[in-house]
Image (tube, rainbow, N blue to C red; front, side, top):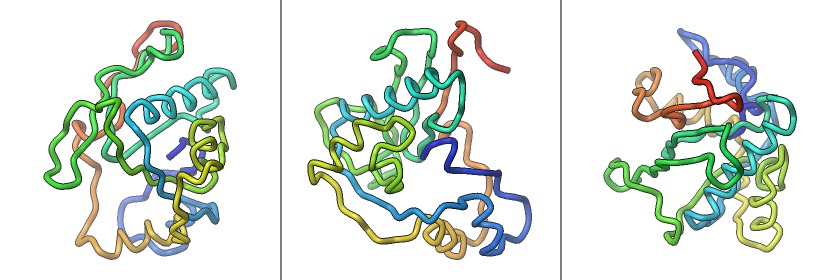
Length: 173
């Protein structure tokens, strides 16, 4: 997802459908794309390049479930992301992202069509390398919440950003 797609944090306590739409307020659908590890890295680089070009606008900044990385925005494009790991859906174990291995990525139709600078996704999508699930983005979030007994903040080890260095070479607080 992109930072601009989430408009507020999920509040503590009971969550209504209306509340879910304040977190994810857009009428997007989910798109599945098959990407190589190399393409996943290109997508991440696209997002951060757009974020940096827009003077720190966090709209395009990437976040993910099942993918984590170290990010150094002071480095040139192509070398900003290191120690990129992907989580196995089969056993939940983390492994180093293999540039040659193909994985399934699920995102919004907005990003799949290149919104917020996600041009690599647009290239794949427009070439027919995607499947429209026709599942409403926010409804799937609500369905997930309903299927859980309770939800809580993920473990720090599961955050997409393990470390971040800003464009000035500093680690943000």
